[in-house]
Amino acid sequence: MQVRTFCHSTAKRLNIAGAVAVCLGTASAWAASVGAEKAAWGEITQAHLLEVIKVLSSDEFEGRAPASRGEERTVAYLQEQFKSLGLGPGTPDGTYIQKVPMLGITADPGMRLVFSSIGGGERMELAFSREFMAWTKRELPEISIDAPMVFVGYGIVAPEYQWDDYKGVDVAGKVLVMLINDPPVPDRNNPSALDENVFKGRAMTYYGRWTYKYEIAAAKKAAGCLIIHETGPAGYPWEVVGNNTGERFDLISPDKGMSRAAVEGWITYEKARALFAMTGRDLEALKRTALDRSFRPVELGATASLTIRNTIRRIESANLIAKLEGRDPKLRNEYVIYTAHWDHLGIGPEVNGDKIYNGAYDNASGVSGVLAIARAFTKVNPPPRRSVLFLAVTAEEQGLLGAKYYAENPLYPLQRTVAVINIDTMNVWGRTRDVTLVGLGMSTLDDVVKAVAAEQGRVVNRDAEPEKGFYYRSDHFEFAKQGVPAIDPKEGIDYIGKPPGWGLEMRGKYTAEDYHKPSDEIKPDWDLSGMVEDAQLLFSVGYRVANAKALPTWSSGSEFKEKREAMMKAVIRNK
Ligand SMILES: [Zn+2]
Image 1 (cartoon, rainbow, N blue to C red):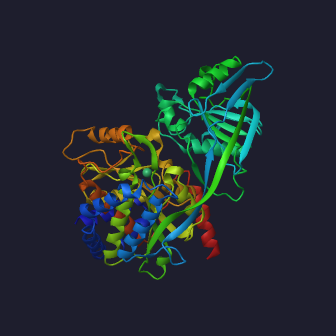
Image 2 (cartoon, rainbow, N blue to C red):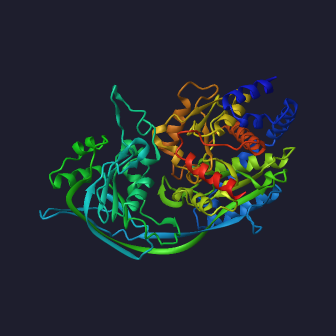
């Protein structure tokens, strides 16, 4: 009964062949497959989930930093888990490991950033870590810049919003000084709100991410790029940027990073204001002009000089991958991928007598979820038509590196990768009436999530904190960037038996007290009943996508749609 309602309503919503595929022919065949699915739900238990989290977040795993003893233990453990589930190796060479070559770059903290007014004799020096942070992505033992600075507002070129902060001004060889985030453009009709039609209002777009800013600086052939830090819009205090003085990891690029701007970095808001004032400019006033399309780059009348000395080493980390072969002889060459990053921050500065950053919630929980889902897949009968890959990626905390490496060096063609379901942290606070889908509205995968959630008596909501730009902050994004439809589900916020607001309060408490700290450990008050439901839901989502006739697609207006369509056209041409 519920089955039929679901099929019809989904058919109406999708209004495409996809609905037929979701329903898979007759209602009875569908009911049988739903029955099989629900039977497999029983494989996902709190005890299993907790057991994996316990192991991965134990002190023996030393916080799971890439290229550490913690990595060795994690790699051994996950391979053993995959094997004991009876899952095949995910790489064509018959192993569970995709090697990820990386660079470790440690910059000499003795570096000095000096601003000098051009022809004015004024000079100011900034203190490393306290007032500025800088590094180079070029694989060089030493790099120096001494170049004029240009304020480029938010530094964005976004044709879909008719926005170009550069206006054709040549900034090659200059040091670009940029504001953080994307422009909070006020709504003309209601100045207390933001214009929803420009950079999605309060929500952050990719143009607001610092990674974008360094990418555009490179594209403009700038010598350097300094972002002005502001605590409110960043969502984190200066220390999160400034304390990051240790080794930085990066993927090895064929051009040794030479296409990047020579220097990338941040400066504090106070120092930026002083810099502007040094040559008679007003940061606050210029910041206001940057909210308008008519903004043009402003020469600051000062140079920035800096020398960075690096210690560089090459390391090899690992993505772990297991494969469940699909049952359909044709469709088994298409793939649904579950991803979760296994890495965390390792051993670091001591906080309250503890220096092991255990990463229980972030992201032992997600890896545990993927293993639980994998277990359900090994038991579901019939098995899925398409193949399913379980991918535990490395170095997410270093900038989504493991996922980026896979997406750029895929083991199976991305054209035949139909969807990515990423799990970065799972609900540890009890059952919820809702599920959060970061980036809700971006692809037809939403409909599958909504359908399963409805069968659980739950609803799907968008992220309650869109300004934090979570869609761009975990591994699924590297797949989306390459065009593969990808979702980033998170725990809901409406907890059963708790007052409204409690869920967000718990999230806020975690962010303030435990996020990226040694205290991210299993807590006595954890309740994994909600995690079980979320894992069941995500298992069913992947199972249905792996069985459906139609492939998931990006929604119109999604920034990744064009790339996917071009990719799929190429496939049709090649057939
Ligand atoms: Zn994480």
